[in-house]
Length: 189
Figure 1 (spheres, rainbow, N blue to C red):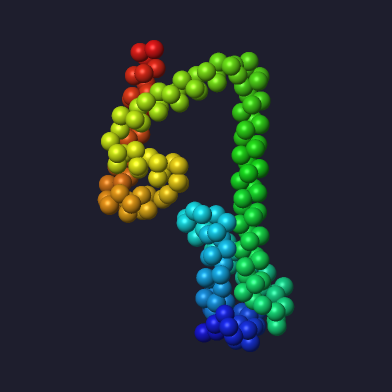
Figure 2 (cartoon, rainbow, N blue to C red):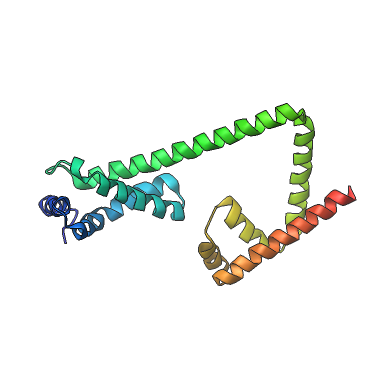
C-alpha cells in the first residue's frame, strides 16, 4: 500500500486504476483520507456532512483521475478537489437559503401580512422560549444539540449518556410537549 510519502507508489496506483484495476483506488483513498478529511471538517464543522462530502470528493477524484498529472503531488490534488466540493456545497446551500428568503419575503409582501406575520412570529418565539424554559435540563440540552448544533442522534445519545433509541424518544416527547405548550399559550391569549 503506498503512503502519502511515496509519490512513485501513488502514481503507480493511479496508473493501475486508469488501466482498469478499480481496487487500486483504495490505495489512493488510504493515502489521501486524512488530508481530505481535515480540509472538509475544518470548512464544515459538521461530522455527518463532512463524511458525505469526503465521499463525494473521492468519487469526483475517481471520475477525474485521468486529469491527474503523474509526478505532481497527488495528495494536494485530492485536497484541491475536496476544497472545491465543499465550497460548491456551501455556495449552493447559501444560494438556496437566499432563494427561500426572497420567496418568503415575496409571499409576505403579496399577502400584505408582513407586519401581522412578524408580530405573530415574535409571539410564537416568546411562547416557545417560555415553554422551553419549563423543560428539564436534559430535554433542553437534547434540543440544543439537535437544532443549534445539528448533531446526529448518535452524537446526541453519546452526549446525553443514552441509547440512540432513548435519545430519539426524548426528542419526540420534547417536540410534542413543546407543541402542546405553545398551543395552550396561543389559545389562552
